[in-house]
Amino acid sequence: QVQPVESGGDLVQAGGSLRLSCAASGRTFSLYAMSWFRQAPGKEREFVATINRSGVFKYYADSVKGRFTISRDNAKNTVYLEMNNLKPEDTAVYYCAARLSSESEPLYWGRGTQVTVSS
Image (cartoon, rainbow, N blue to C red):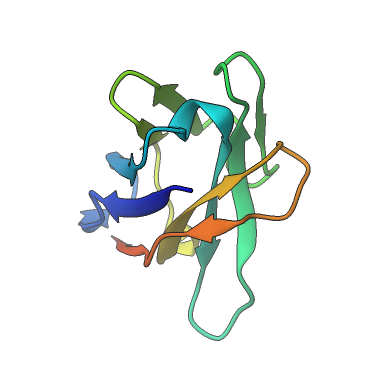
């Protein structure tokens, strides 16, 4: 079992960058694929990016491909989301989730961190 805790959300201008972190407690972090999701006001939560256990396989939503990069450090039990060239439509609460594989339903969720991009 892991408990993800997100951090790094902030208010940033369009075109700017942010790096989100997700620290997961527990000694089994490396056994989980990790993903980022986001939920904008009035919209459903949507997938952003996922990374497999070893960090070799990464997959992104089309809306963030080329701008966002997911990575992980298993020694630090942490997954990151580097976000560049941010757009106002990236404004959302960003959630980190642990799942048994990159295709399975998330098992454990963090509480989220707010990212606001001003135009």
